[in-house]
Image 1 (tube, rainbow, N blue to C red):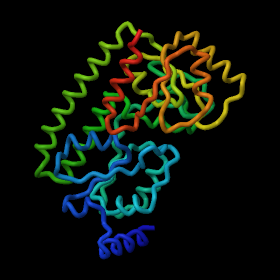
Image 2 (image 1 turned 90 degrees about the vertical axis):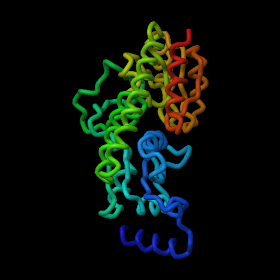
Image 3 (image 1 turned 180 degrees about the horizontal axis):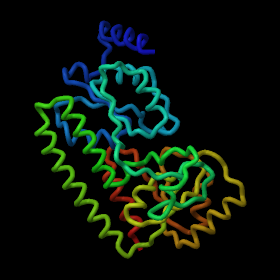
Length: 294
């Protein structure tokens, strides 16, 4: 695979088909998802070009990068993975030895049990991240926690300092500014949720880390694109009603006809969210305001 990618990169360069990152004559950094890109931009400014592997609207848990994206990654100085999505492992194996691979989730305490796809489970501050995992994958949505975002940023900053020691002081100043901003938003979020309902429903359990941070109860009600049996639907609805759920979050990358009918039966507000958005902080604010809303 590496030899094939190298030949294709050379061919594209000769024919003038390389991406604009190369034309800008800046080193290229690759990330897996847009929230990572936003964090990395706060640390590097205009010193690097940044590319994102995940296509807009794609599901990272089933994503398979195109050859174009693989070629782009092959030219990168470093690749910043979330350390959680299946496509990242195969991509990392295809990259040349010169590419620095950074797992930005190092140091984050993972949550297990949210992605077994047996569903109708809850997750939050009191659920299951220190259990016997039986080979279960960790919940991959680590960036939805502001506390985790702080760790992600620090991992990125350490890697950047290694890549260019001469710029380490600048990167660390930018990191300190970012950490102050994240801490401020974290405190404001906790204050906003004071006295709010402690439970919310969600189609795909992508807010487990957010729920853990603020002592919330996330009730996952969907099964990706699969239709749930009638008995399971009734159990989900009863659980949400018993938890006094007021809001039901639905992620835009999923399309399931059951979602609206379940939401109607619960009697909650259905709000579309996009945790994978570049403006992930805006999404956190939206989620917080909806949970805090009477």
